[in-house]
Image (cartoon, rainbow, N blue to C red; front, side):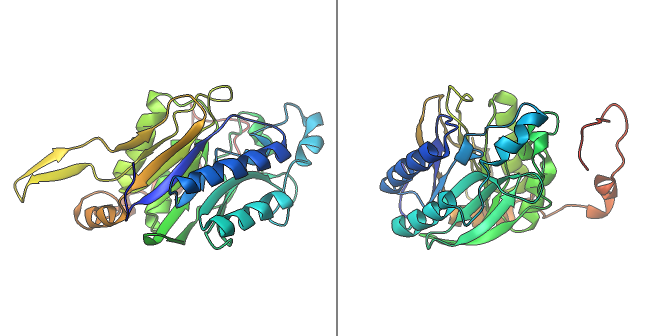
Length: 300
């Protein structure tokens, strides 16, 4: 349960449907339910407009591209209108029409119906059919007007979370909460990844996955407050930062972030950008790839 003063992110854990019109209708229904639950943001799983449908062969690509939409398409403008009507931000995900091959994209529509942030997946799964997508080229944040004031929001998509650089860049750009649409099985190791991204960057993370039948659910969120003072100035206790974890079933699961507490914690703790040594990290921007990590299908 969430209380006044808390940023509330509704994780819309849904079952895949490859029909764009059905997904538009279902998306409306679940956004309205999320608003009734008090959500500030409703977050869809990855590539919701076509249910994360990808071509299996090169011959299928042209037909697959027909499902791509842009921000002038009815699918997108309908969610802009809905966000304005509900006074609630919506993180809508879609196969984005793009020059050449489409992109795997999330747009965060603010509660006034404006597109506040658009991000295309940088780490496309080039070892799979997602190689047919055009990768994004950077990570972005925005200042989102919410019921608890302005909150700096960032976004990454699914496989992005397996690269620590994704969350690190967003933290360096000021992100306080990162939204993560997802479309793959969530296991204990991936859960640990998310916990670590929140911990090492002192940033909230909220992931929405498809329910059982498409993936395996387990949409989840972590906050940043890893330690709490129990005796003022003398003793600290470690705490579980898991806010919410869904089961496998379809539904709406609320992630509640105490933004004031997050900001106070970031002012004093040692992670994030407090004690980094960037001069020692030059190898991180090298394009060179050695064995055993060379892959012929990797895009650079």
